Image 1 (cartoon, rainbow, N blue to C red):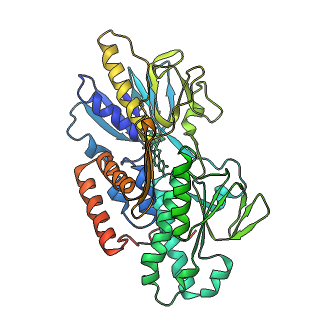
Image 2 (cartoon, rainbow, N blue to C red; image 1 turned 180 degrees about the vertical axis):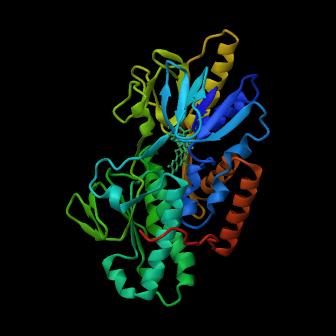
Image 3 (tube, rainbow, N blue to C red; image 1 turned 135 degrees about the horizontal axis):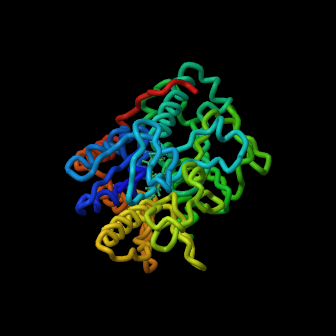
Length: 411
Ligand SMILES: Cc1cc2nc3c(=O)[nH]c(=O)nc-3n(C[C@H](O)[C@H](O)[C@H](O)COP(=O)(O)OP(=O)(O)OC[C@H]3O[C@@H](n4cnc5c(N)ncnc54)[C@H](O)[C@@H]3O)c2cc1C
């Protein structure tokens, strides 16, 4: 078995296959798994990168039938049953699970690729953290830069990532950096959230959407709804209604597309690039190839596509692993059905919205506590859980963000 991608889907699959008498290779371009729901906390200095990125070899260390490889996959020889990688020999397979996820998409908005920072990878998060902190250092040296937008931070996209990032940035500025920069008027720092549609958190109920907007505004975030970004420049963002926001920092959380690997495999794709798969997550014409998570689009006539969420990838990973186990015993694979257990987004300290099936909804402190608990449970590795819990407790009690480290070079 070969699994491409040690993300949510790949790791879920490997953990089931570790209990099956088969040989498994899991290959990823990085030597770590990225817990993306907490990327925004790395970007806002609440957590260190290592806290949310367990090492892949460490994850499978005790699984004797699993080998981890660090390599970038650039193709698949379906005839020869081999995965083509950028370093070392190709990896032969009997069954292949493609779980390479998604990448940030600029939706062809001019200037996004050149001037905006995405929030999709660990490198993006540390780059954003360094950029934010550097803006404060620069304006501390030369406060006249504030007029040119040096302390204005525009976040594109009002989905969970944009909302969570804006809330965390606002709290970082008012509660932490205001104390760090004693001679700077930190009150002039502004977070602006720009969302193309008329509402935040599009997949949530109107009550949660309204709560998120109110909570962000209470934290000083400027929420602009119903207006798309027309272009992004090095020192400004232009909106479609002609508004110009002077800023030197734009964060792009407005959308993703399938990993470009999908495009080189010669398989049928959707408009957004996902690989079309059968109900059992196999690829048409390739019964030994499965695609899961953000890379896959299950073709079910008349049904809504599965959302691009970690639980979907994890459930699909476990499902295909069990299917492979069944197939090795001569039994057919079963269709995959995503079981929706709810959605959540946090806005800031003691504020989150959570929606469960059957219309159950809660927000405020209860929503926030459930958000904290759930993310702690899903984080991989006992050490990471302890470190994150200690960090959260410290940050809560002390209003601190202990990872205010500038690492990357200026853009
Ligand atoms: C900032 C952010 C916040 C999010 N928050 C939430 C949330 O709160 N709740 C939620 O449910 N979902 C959230 N998501 C979505 C969730 O992260 C994805 O739906 C989920 O990661 C999809 O899992 P996956 O296994 O398909 O891909 P991923 O988890 O992205 O894993 C893909 C893996 O493939 C590897 N890879 C990619 N290309 C190659 C290649 N060519 N060769 C080798 N390896 C490769 C990558 O390095 C990566 O490790 C968030 C996403 C982002 C970006």
